[in-house]
Image 1: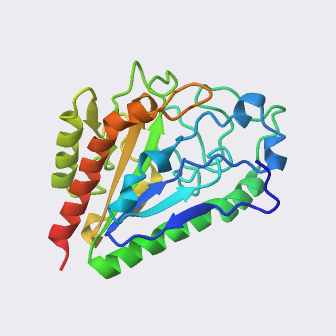
Image 2: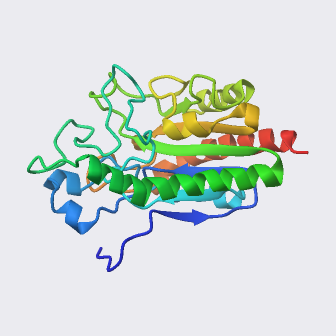
Length: 272
């Protein structure tokens, strides 16, 4: 797809409920000048959280606001700290402007990885506007409802030896080890995940939440944040061409709906 002008860093739908669904890794756009520096593999942006908008289409009917990245995480990773600090010290991770794929292969064909100035430019052009919108919407929701709920929606291949052994549980809930949302809500969400027939669930396992969950989740300030990292095999084809599988997705969507309904019920109980 050819763009004659720079693509905005996000799309945004403002809802009426006290819930914001963030999709920071759903973007696939890579500016042509940057794509020219990529390997053929990297130009396929295989580490995308594919089809998040379609999977969570029901969230609009729940009244949720929805914030969706347009640019690939290979341009800049919106779920990393602005200084690029590791979220999981001692473990293999990808950075603010990644230089390798989840399969540990180079993104840049000729090794011309971004320098500090290029990283700063991408952060200013894409990362900063996304986070400004996220912050503004959470503040608006909290001002209107007295409480704001943030659901950070992610997906990942179910088997990725670089990051974890074996097959990942299907529904990986993260609350920054209990710091980003009310513990009672976290336990309720875990119960929904664990009781979903045919799926496995865990709370604060391999994924405890990225920068967005950790930074914005402030229960004492009436902002509760939860990350859900789903296995892609729960709704799509995990290899090229990364097709959405409606019949497969239909199996997990009711459980996602139950989780978001629980989040909204929690918020309603705390509204003035």
